[in-house]
Length: 96
Image 1 (cartoon, rainbow, N blue to C red):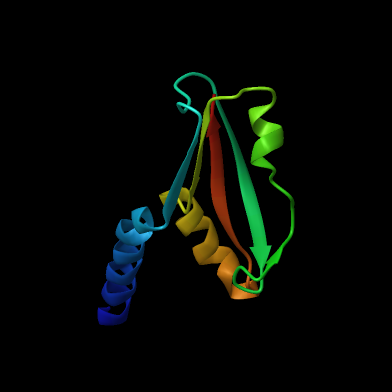
Image 2 (image 1 turned 45 degrees about the vertical axis):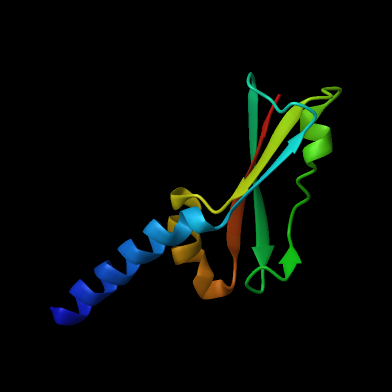
């Protein structure tokens, strides 16, 4: 029983610390309208990307936009289960 409580406690700490893994880049004056979101997948604990998420393609012809790259709480939960086979993910959001 104690092992289960410790595991839940560790999981909650990891979820709360996920906000520390957020990077925001502002191009021009930044974006405030439409958002586009894609998930970037990696194997070998982030060393090898599986798919290509291109923020410039997501922004299209916009000259003012914001790129937010983060490991959201959903990504933490996904990576908790897929981490066994060394797969993890992060979310890339472009706001135009």
